[in-house]
Image (tube, rainbow, N blue to C red; front, top):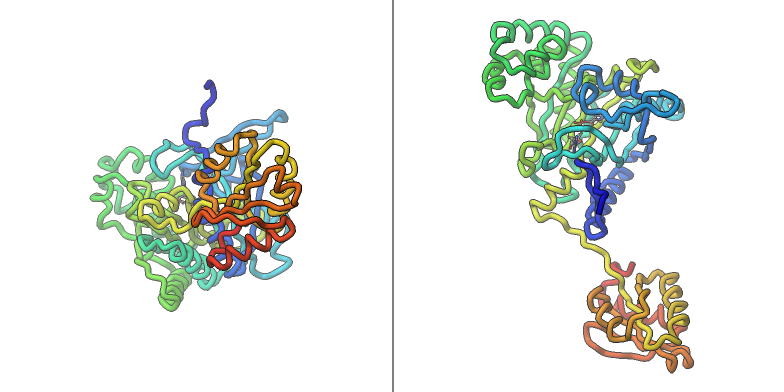
Length: 429
Ligand code: HAM
């Protein structure tokens, strides 16, 4: 075949989509328990929204965005992340007017032209949460606590939370100078990438993966030890809130994140089950973002996590509790004359909330029985012209092999009765 999916993108095939539905359903249910409401924004936005929001000098904006011109020469970009888009929507629709704090969640595909590897794709999917409108550390705690709870609900124990404070516009400039002073004598020995970052974004040198950079920055001053009073107080309160809610964490002064909009809190959930792309999720506070986008001065804090990485952890740890849903009933026609009539019975059962399948290939009864076994249904319904004339069907219990004639009018009730007797009506549909 001539066509293949694009490098770095993946098909989610029918045999695995139940896994996605499971992690998405668990996330939605939990988000509603925390009173977050869903937000959906378009897949593409003006390029400038991300350039300004995420930062011109970040890797995402500098080399990873899918940017194109439409027929009217507008520069558009497939969203590489949601936060800038959510704030754009928040400002555009004045969501803050309806309530003082806006809590939203999303499940959406994102696009970044990175080098594909395990846990790193070009189209990937994120779950995310944003709390907009509060400066207080309780909002940060709400985001982190729900993320921790989500991993717990899925059975993931290997998700280590690392938190940091990256300061604010008051304390960061002085710290930046201090860090640069520390780095300057060793500047020629740092990796090329870190040398490039020295002027533009020296904080990112601290999370370099380069071994030598790590050694050279071992004793570097950290922002968390150089916070202004306000940031320090915020960071301490957040830690108290996390301890109070039983969320375990470590403070790691090297968590600086790859997006420029963070102030105060920055955090990541790391999983050792993931290899080099070990960030299950990450987030933080972005009090200056709305203003940067030309809007009001509105604080915010949020998180986003990769669903592909989450599924990798669940599979590696054998934690996939959910299973694929199977039809409960297969309807097999004994002859062609009864097929049309049996198709009507099939629809009746479906309307009665019973999941069923039937033959779409006009196969022989024997082949249909084989299909019923392959689909692992609990009941097979068999009918020929004789049954049709009596308006009844034969119900075969696939586990016991027992067969029973049942009038069509009683069929749905009979199946439901059998299912609840077996204690598995939860799997009905
Ligand atoms: P981020 O750290 O760029 O933050 O991405 C969040 C998560 O998305 C990562 O921890 C990872 O699990 C997943 N992810 C990122 N890139 C890829 C990729 N190429 N392939 C697979 N998974 C990936 C943000 O996006 C911020 N918007 C988070 C945030 C929300 N901050 C505040 N609110």
